[in-house]
Image 1 (tube, rainbow, N blue to C red):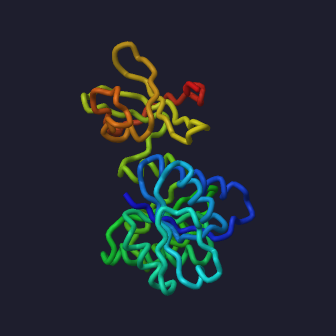
Image 2 (image 1 turned 60 degrees about the vertical axis):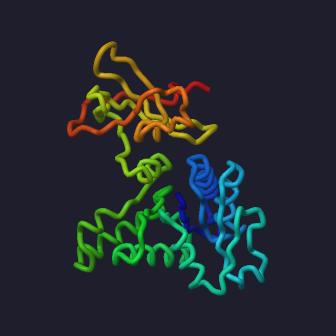
Length: 268
C-alpha cells in the first residue's frame, strides 16, 4: 500500500514533531507500506524519509523542478519524481497514494490535505484520508470542521467521520479499517471466546504497539499480542509460528474493571 504523507518542510518549535515524523516513517516501512511524500531533505519531510529508509522501507519523493534548482531534494530516496510545478506535484502525489495523511505542517500541508478531502468527498479521488493529531496539533482543524457542520456548510455525518488519529496505534487500526481496542472493552474471538482488554503497551525499541488482554474463559490467563496481529488475520510470513487466525471483534458491552497495566508485560 502507498501512503502519501503531507507535512512541514520545517521542524517547528517543538522537538517532539521531529521524533514523531521519524517514528511515522519507520512505522510505514515496518508495516510493509511505501511512503510517498514531497521529496525534500529539509524539516519534518527529511525526518520522515529518513525514518522509513533506515527501517528498510521504500520511499517515493515527488519534487517540483524549482525545488530541485534549489537543491532541496533528498538524495537517498528509492525513487524521485520531478514535476514541472506544484500543481502537477500535488496531482502526482494523489495519483500514487492509497491513503493520505496530514502530519503537522504549515500552509502547504493544509492546502494539500484540503484538496484531498474535497476530491474524496466529491468521489473524484479513491482512497482514505486522516489527520495525524499528534500532540493535539489538529484540534483547531477538528473544531473548524465541526463549526462548518454547525453552520450548515457540510453534513454532520461527514464532519463527525473525519478521522483525527492521536497515535501510531490509532493509525494501525485506521489502516486496517478496525476500531482501536480500549482498556475495559470486551472483544470476541472468531471462535466466540471472550476477552477483556487490559491495556495497550508500546515497545520503546521497535515502536510496535501491543494489546494486553485477559481471557474470560478457562484459566482467565493474560496474553499480549502485536496490535496489527490482534486486529487482522495473521501474516504467516511475519508470524510463522501461529497456526490459526487471531481476529477479534469488539462487543457492544463495556466492562467496568479497568486496571492500570503498563509495559511491564513487554519482554525485552
